[in-house]
Image (tube, rainbow over all chains, first blue to last red; front, side, top):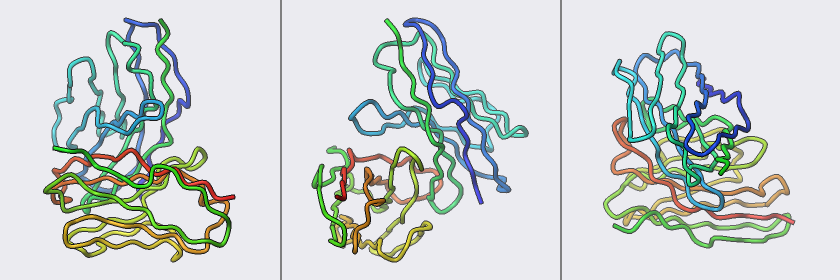
Length: 113
Length: 114
């Protein structure tokens, strides 16, 4: 079975600073996909970034980047130049073949002005 | 394109009743997945439908069922509601439900069971 662990239930960061959210996963699969989703308060979940396990290069989307360590089964999200709009619950997710997602329990991030 | 829509947005039911939730995927998307989100358990996968067929199923009791129509719209039904069924129910759609697809989530239906 696949499991996704987010060990930081809550985090905070000063506006304009950098923050890293941790995620580890457990799987016996060799090919899979990893995602970070963002769920702002009372708003719908949106995709932040995705990473294919077969790609060694870390994915980057503007201020968001990941540190993917396949051997360590680690997939952390770095948010640079944090903005107030980044305040949200962040979910790490794992997907193997079959379009079935496994989500972590989430990290609540608060950006402090 | 319009995003994923879910109706209703809020529901209040009592124990023992049944409820039907609806999800309209993004136009052209054929895969619809359903998730239950609770503070304690996080997001848990319920099931996925593709071309009117249930393709994947999570670890939920038979009280939870779903279906998909030819226009890819999907419904989820929960019978004999229990207090623990109170949750945010999210649906997500993707073009074909393949490994390369990204899921796009709807706003959710907030179900409260009294």
